[in-house]
View 1 (cartoon, rainbow, N blue to C red):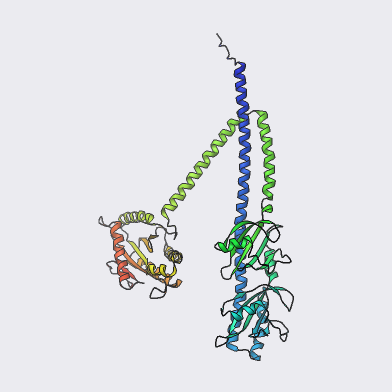
View 2: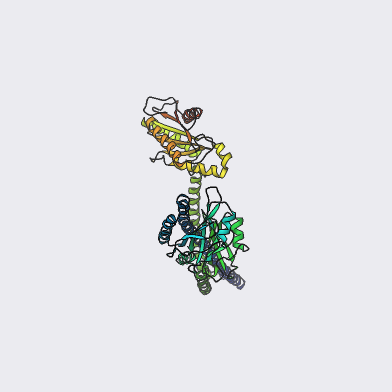
Length: 521
């Protein structure tokens, strides 16, 4: 007898229909929300990528400005020395005139070079007409040097050169007489258009901007070059406020006080001169491609929702749930793998120096002892300690102390010549180098190379007798491993040798229970 098919009641059909419609609406809303969230995240990614671009561009521009001013400043130092040595006799001025013309030809950024006496009268310049004299007594840079005894370079407010009418940036140094009195100024004028021409090689869009700004807020170069750009005081603007209250580097979305355009500003201070450079990318231009893509995606989303509504959501729901589940599984797997890799690296690496940390060293020494016992090969250890490091921190501060440890670590890291060698930060200012298959001679060579390499860095340390940062090292070598040899005894022996090295005057190498071998301890 055939089974009677189940017949749904109207109420049941209505319930199923209502459920299907509700589910269809839910899926459509969910899909629309997901696309909207994705579009918004892409907007954030676009701004983030532009921030990186702006920062990289600012870094490049800052390096270029540093190099530009450094080259000109080097010429000024040479001229100052020449004036002090040769004086200002007619013959000396003739030689200086030839030298100044040669320097201007060699450096494309230079508009001119000149030397002024204590009254502001130009005594020699780089113009072909050497007899054309002028006065700079009214110029800002001359007034600055006359009242400031600082011998360092001074970058002043841009002005138009009297000889050519070109806008130039003055870079000057004070000249002193033998008795330390003000004797004049040596001046280099740098073309503003040199910077502007270089800035034009960067793609910053139609509304982007690049500016070079003195530490006091005076703008000395800009692309695009507006009529009132040069010499404009920006110290009241939001960008300057961020720069002065930060560390000199950063980025921010700021509406320009010069043209009203909202831009993503990346700014960076020069390494050697009181100037910072800013690269500004228009927010509208940054997001223009994103806006076009967002419109396309929104239209496509509406089409997809319409198709889903026509075809029915039951099948689509199953497909999307499966795809979503697979994607989530892949994302979770990748995230877990990435997290595990990151945790593994963090667990075995010292955060300050990048060397292996104590945990990894302890694991490595146990493995090395086991391997040396099986292979009957020697195993060497070098313990290294920075001499008078506490004094270094007290004298120069913890930031300088951290940088010192990083430099010492880089030298020690270079001792890892083989894949199974290991350099580690043992603790504080103490480091360890584990050298499998290495005898005493080899360990002494490695230790001495580290000591000499650190000498070559010449890191200042007035609290240390040599006047520079030095290290002491202790060495222990196991030539035949026995059951009594342990990681603790091995480290203790090297530490005893290190203590002996420090007790013997520091900046030296000591061997624990020396065995017959060549080399000095």
